[in-house]
Image 1 (cartoon, helix red, strand yellow):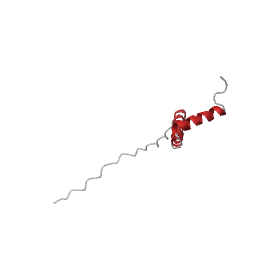
Image 2 (image 1 turned 120 degrees about the vertical axis):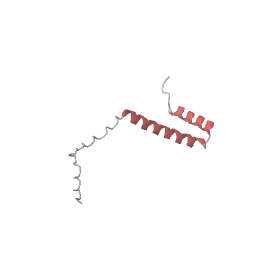
Image 3 (image 1 turned 180 degrees about the vertical axis):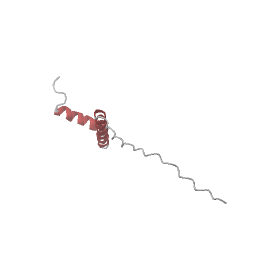
Image 4 (image 1 turned 90 degrees about the vertical axis):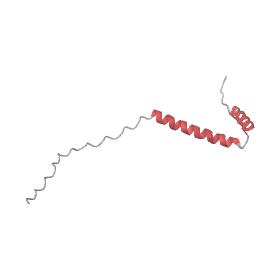
Length: 77
């Protein structure tokens, strides 16, 4: 079977694509293919990278219980 993608094969594939899609449509297809590959690479990167660990929460300091304010003295009338 030999080498499947020789330069001559790529030229023939390019001519066939040009005949099928036309000159106006090929840049759109290339752009869509590039964006799709970029999204695919980002998706694969997200799957292979470990999830970032959240930073540890700061310790909560407990304050001493606060006594209620003293009642004002009663007026002797």
